[in-house]
Image (cartoon, rainbow, N blue to C red; front, side, top):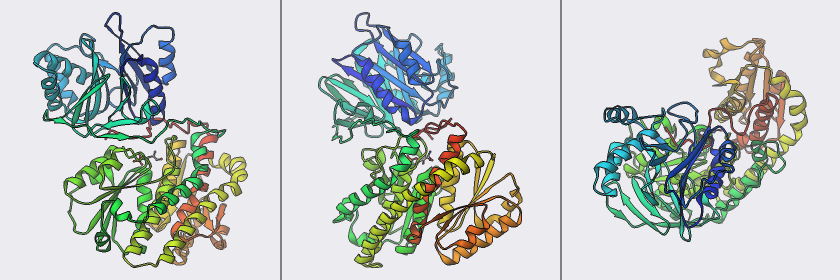
Length: 614
Ligand code: M6R
């Protein structure tokens, strides 16, 4: 999703900004732009381009556009189509105020009408251009910068992070944050502003994450930070330990494939970090032993793949900790009645830790004074900072839009955490906890080895065959149902093939009407014997209707294997880790289908890596 980068300092800004935008490319975008103030003419100069960042770089090549202050942006279209005029920066009437923005100005339509009545001229279809004109209006009417910014923040509604640059103040950037993330990198005689510290990692490791509803006046050596009431805030600085290393695809055709293969080591690293921190884990998470022992209910909130991980983890917590567990989609939870419960813990899962839906649910939970925990892959993310405590997965940076290693490391952390909680509640022994860790490592082996076992069959035979179909049905039961949902999401997002998932038991309540020769059914088995028998009946129902069936089964489940047209046989693991064991093979299978179809797998159309708008 949109990337914001700004620079003010002794150095020249263009390279810093283009480098920063390049590092944020993986988040997804469809146009980009750069603006700076020319140190000689003191005038604002800019270029914008549709499509890849390289198009902007080519436009700037050979042009003497550079300066000591500048802003840049990668845009993921929300308001207004993908075009040069809608790319950021956006400007006021006289092109002397430039704004780059991430988020959505919800009352932009109303504001635009007001501004048009005051003779403002608009050239784009974006909500961001409204911000530039609101700035123009209030800077004209106000007696001080602070007064102007406070009026602007009162006027705008929605979630936003924007950086504004003014031709008549060529030494200062204004950074404003409400909802969407924004941070400032503090260097030597230079400052960086960005939506993600990755943009300036390596240039400085000292960072100020802007608190929500705050703004900063930033020059090369100083930051003045204020809240939305105009009260000065003492900045809290953080030292980053992230580095920018772009080791590229390392010989793999796509980042997604590389990341599928990084899962075994990601699981090992996640487990090893969790184990090394296990002493006083409750204290580190802002909880107490007593609180955990007396927990009565768990809530899990997440979006997309992270929500699927939460749905699978529901089985961990309910079975091991005997805790009723409610798993909610962040985008729904936010607008549902909030029922405060005693002895509750809310876990927010997000790979990026910046997903706005999930973050807003965290803020809502905090406002109810309820305890919260983040599970994220980005230790510096807003979710990790804002939650009462944070469990960190160690998947390494995930670049492909389709989440793979984040999912398997989330399952790892949640499985471990459920055992830790069960141990605290004296429901399992320390020995069982140790076994659980071994089981995770075994599942990680199975995850990778299964890909190897079927690599040739999938790439040479199965993927070309299944790539011919226009729609798929995915089925699973019990713990395999949310896993089947994840498989369907994976296939649809990277191949654009219509994929629908149902709990296998629901088939006869309606979806069975969809079965025909043109609609293959992908069925995921289960290691629980009772559930397996039910899955078997569902497979028979599918075959009796003449539909094509592909099954993922576990060793010893020959009857189910023999019913299928194609089957993958996976070694048996701890029954709760069946989904984790099937993860690599499932991801590789759908990846290969998308590859046969020639899809842009790492950056599927319309999608962004980090969804920072609602
Ligand atoms: O960063 P998050 O885990 O919060 O992201 C949530 C979803 O946007 C994400 O999982 C999305 O569904 C992926 N594209 C799935 O592959």
